[in-house]
Image 1 (tube, helix red, strand yellow):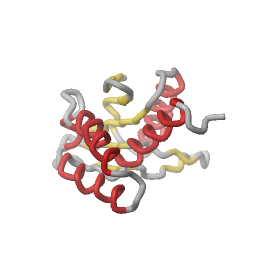
Image 2 (spheres, rainbow, N blue to C red):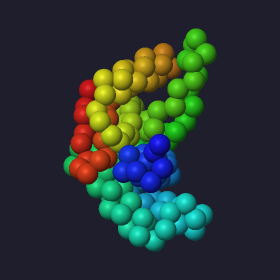
Image 3 (spheres, rainbow, N blue to C red):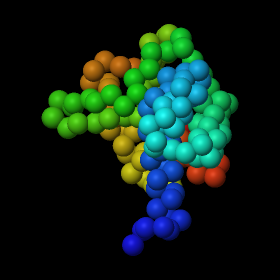
Length: 150
C-alpha cells in the first residue's frame, strides 16, 4: 500500500539520511559519504545534492556543530549489549575531551515519546559502562532540522 506514495518516499529519505549519518564522524566526511552512496548506486546525483543539503544542515547546526569536531571520540552505530542481554544501537555517541558523553539519535517523521524513552535506555546502559552522560539529543530531519535536548 505504500508503493509510490509520499509516505514511502519520506521513509526512504529518512532511512537514507540515517545511513549516511552513520558514515560521518566530522564535517570533512560529508562528501566522502555521499560519494560512497552515489558510486554504490544507492542514490542518484539529484538525490546526492538534496541529501548533501540536509546532512550539511545537521552537521553545521548551531546546537550540533560541536559534536562533529575531531577532538571528540565518536561511536556511530555501535552495538551495546546490556547486562540483561538486550542489544542497543545508538546512532551516535560522542565523548568529548572532558570525558562527557552525549547521545544523539536521528529521526524523521512525527515526534514521539518513545524516541525520548529510547535515549534514556541508551543512557542507562552507557552509565552502567561508566560513561558520564551529560546530554541526550533527538535530531528530527524533516523539512526543518528540529533539535530536542534532554
